[in-house]
Every structure is written in C-alpha cells, then in structure tokens.
Length: 172
Image 1: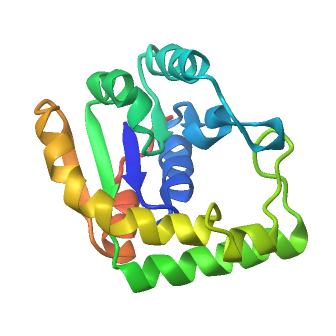
Image 2: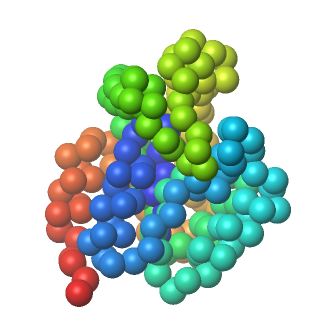
C-alpha cells in the first residue's frame, strides 16, 4: 500500500497508523532519500531500498518519489492519495516545521530542519510546498492511469481518511 500526497498532508502519520492497525511493516521514503547532512541518496541505493521493502508480502510505504514509482506502485494493490486543500496543508506544514525547528527534532539519519532554511530558503520545505502542491494535483491522475491495477482512495478532507482508517479491520 502506498500513501501519497504533498509535504505536510499527513502521509507518514496515516501510513504509520495503517501499519499499526494491520500489523504490517511501514517505511518512509524520506528516510531512504535523505542521508546524513541532507545528502541525497544515490539513485541505485534509493531504488534498491524501495525494491527490497516492497518485495515483502504486505507493507505500507509513504512518499511521492517518482524515481522509484515503477517499483513500489507496480507492487502495491492500493494507493491512498491525500489530496487536501492548499490552505489546510500549508498550515499543517508550517506548524510541523515550526515544531521541528524549535525542538531540533531529529528526522532521518541525524538530519534536523533549520527554521531559516525551512521557512525562507528557495530549497526549504515551504518553498517546496508552493512548487509541488498544485503540480502533484495536476500530474497524479496521469500517473495513476499507468497503474490500472491500483485501488485508489482519494481523500480530500482529513475526516474522510480518519473515517476510512477507523473502519479498517484490525489484524491480530
């Protein structure tokens, strides 16, 4: 199962909850992509991680990295698309970024968000939101058309995702 959406939409939170409910492994693609000191993982290394993880019989993975969609999406049976409004995602992302920056929370491989970079840099997460939110919304239907086997659950409001999760049958 894949959970997709723009940065700040709640992909990781939902994917973790699904994994816990179903008793299956969860992986966050950001952890494979962001090596120490914010170095991007080599393409082969990233693809190998997606390949190894998605070779398991059951799993949930969050992320939008197109550089390995051909692996993960081909093996998934379901894709959950968190297609929330820009204002909602913006405020969630801002709140998350401020919290991470102020607490110096470790993210992946020893990396921490710098508030100055995250909020004001052209390479920061807030700038990324403005570059990617509407583009993902435009491009996602075309990408999904390449994987007709996927059951697509498109949630436009957090309450829809929460109700779906609540109805998801617990596994022993």
